[in-house]
Each structure stands twice: as C-alpha cells, then as structure tokens.
Length: 236
Ligand code: TYD
Image (tube, rainbow, N blue to C red):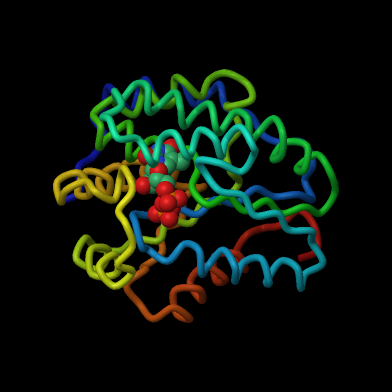
C-alpha cells in the first residue's frame, strides 16, 4: 500500500515550496530522471539526448552526486564510505554537490537559448533516500533546498518505477561491487519506493511516473509520449 504524506508534512511542504523559483529562459529545459537502483535511467537518458539533439537543442547530461570536479570528490567520499554517515550529513553532502552543480553548470546553461540539461537524479533522490528511507522527513529536505541556488526544480522529472524484485535481479546480473547504498537491505529499498510515491504526490505536475517493468523501447515510448503532450513555449 502507498503511504500518503501526512497532512502536517504536506502543509509544511507547501509553505516551503513557495521558496522554489523558475529559471528564466523559456527556450531551455531542465529534466531529471529518478528511480531505484537498476531502473534503467541511463538507457533512457541516452535516448533523450538523441531525441533533443534531433530537435536542434544543445544537450548536456550531468549526474548526481557529481557533475563537477568538487561534486565528483563528494561522490567518491559518499559512495565509497567505509563508515556509516549520519543521515543529516548525507543530506547536506548531496545538497552540497547539487548546489555546486547548479551554480557551476546547470544555471549558466539554462540561461542560454535552446539548451536541454538532463540530470541523472536530483532533489527527488534526496526526498526518497534521505527524507523517507533515512527518516529525516520530506520537510527537512525541502527546507535545505529553500536557499539559492538549491531552490530550482527540474521542469520535468521522469520517475522510472520498477519493483524490488526487478531491481535486485538486475543488480545480481550486473554482478559489480556494491556501493554504499546498493549494500542496503530490502526494507530500505521499500522505503525509497515509498519516498518516490510521496514526491510524485507532492509534485504532480512535474513528476511523471513511468512503468519501468516493460521492455526498454516501450518504457522509452512512455517518456516520449509525455514529452509530446507538453505545451512547449516554442517549436519543438
Ligand atoms: P549511482 O551509482 O549514481 O546510482 P544509480 O546508478 O542507481 O543512479 O549512485 C548514486 C547513489 O546515491 C544512489 O544509490 C542514490 C544515492 N543518492 C541519495 O541517496 N541521495 C541523493 O540526493 C542522490 C542524488 C543520490
């Protein structure tokens, strides 16, 4: 069963949401992809890049944590940590990488014409992993993002939803060394999924949930369908 955000969380979240702001250039767009481990984000990011290049946009792909030299150092520190990191420290570390990425890359790009920035994970990962799975609370995560440059949200987010069994099966097939989060157990992943459901309820316009259980081309087809239904302020 999907857990709904408590009314008090929703209320405080709504207040915090007023602090979020829009980017100024209407010809440029910021898109993020989200989902649990092995949901297939990377494949669809490549597909999206080709799609927008064909439409005559310049496309930049970035990832979180990371995407800048400082951010990649933080990524290394977090994902290969040998010691448990207190949840609040995790939240601030991811936010630090995000702030750097926004200031150094995303915002300068979005101020130019016909740019598409595609980010592999963004604020919704913090809402799900730190806010819900690590029990910090969604409002805590939103609160951290009140301050510039963190108060910028993607224009569109695709949450590629798969179930736990699919995630674990695909992770087994990859057979690579598990990082800090991949080593977590089933209950943690259940909470992440719950966190994404909460994020999707908080941001129904922005977050589009995609059924990631289908065959790759069908999953990508769902993403394209959403893009085709968007009322773009310019010729696509
Ligand atoms: P990564 O190897 O990029 O995972 P994936 O390929 O599944 O995207 O590692 C990023 C990990 O960091 C992933 O487990 C999710 C986690 N994460 C958070 O917990 N909070 C965040 O805000 C972000 C951006 C990532």
